[in-house]
Image (cartoon, rainbow, N blue to C red):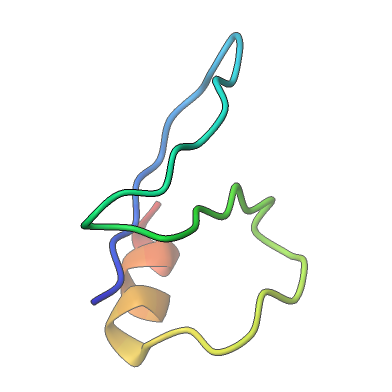
Length: 47
């Protein structure tokens, strides 16, 4: 499962792997981050 969140942050705390996520990507919207599900591409177009 892939989840997409949009936010603005003043500071970024260290990510701690857990049962729900093993990694997090803070994406700039243009860098190649690999495969993105079609539904997520559509959601990105909306923001």
